[in-house]
Image (tube, rainbow, N blue to C red; front, side, top):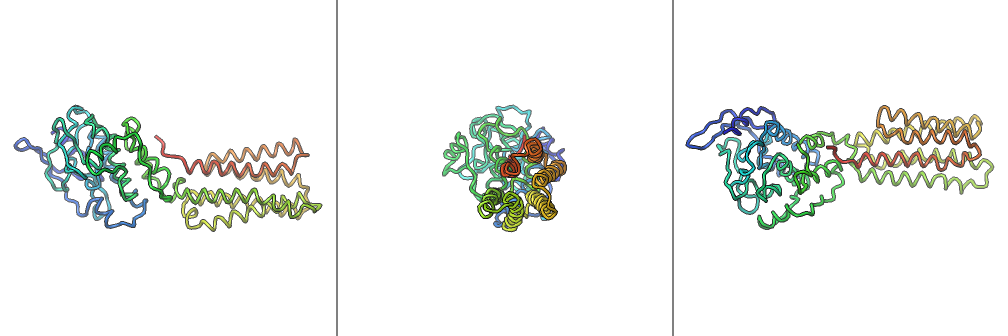
Length: 417
């Protein structure tokens, strides 16, 4: 009854409203709001072509609802796609807290009615169903087997981290079209869920790395390996997919590979073509800059349907393009004015350093690293002029490699928490 009253006091847009609660003949009953719509499972079935970002948007509402229940000290213990409603307004509401218990309850009461094979029988019902809040019965299992955590299968005490596990199973299923754990019987399913080896996500390059890692952590075997709340997962699901650095990682890495190969091949090509020229060094220096700028724009155009659709990667590509245009125009003007090559080199490095430092202020702090490499090049050019501009063939690629390294690291970074 205590949990029922707590649920009745829970007011959150992503939780079905409980209008009244009472007890009759030893049974606790709940009167809940009617929500026109269908379950999250039904929504997914009606939208088989929905992208992962649409799935994540709906899952975000369910995660916020569960988190709100956790804040009130309630653990759902039976979250699954059938226990989340998608209203006609598109809002997701968590319902069917029929197995909910207070986090302060006795661990011994965390076992409940047994359930059958497949998805199980516990937790079925609709928004208007009158449910017995406490289905505890020592010696058996609470929940729907397909979405149960290892500790539920083992009959151990559960807390909100068990809900995190169930939510991760449901989200995995919605994104990849199948559940992470399989079994032809409850026994086989329990063995898979409790196994040390964890599932690997199917190869879908469009799913951001942050989300993949969040799912992996949510499905960790031991509760202490998962997050202590749903907040980090809510943060991951809240990230705008169009601005997530970990999105389009396949196209992003391919772009970096092509660009790096071009940056290395450019100086070699111009060096071989103009190796007999008196102005060989200036030709290599000038030609490589133009070649690099063309490489950036050509590869960016080739990946316009992937990288350019992501705000983060688009910003990085535009930044590279601006640096290339500024550096290329500087070399054209300096060469046309007949400036000495050592002056052109120092000036180019100075402009490059300034661009990256501005980028560090407005875009990403890691841009300080390639900016510092440009400063090192300036100092070396002034202190050891005999080594330049030949040493620029080492400094320039180093700057771009560091840019690519930190860009890739940001894109591969998982969720924090």
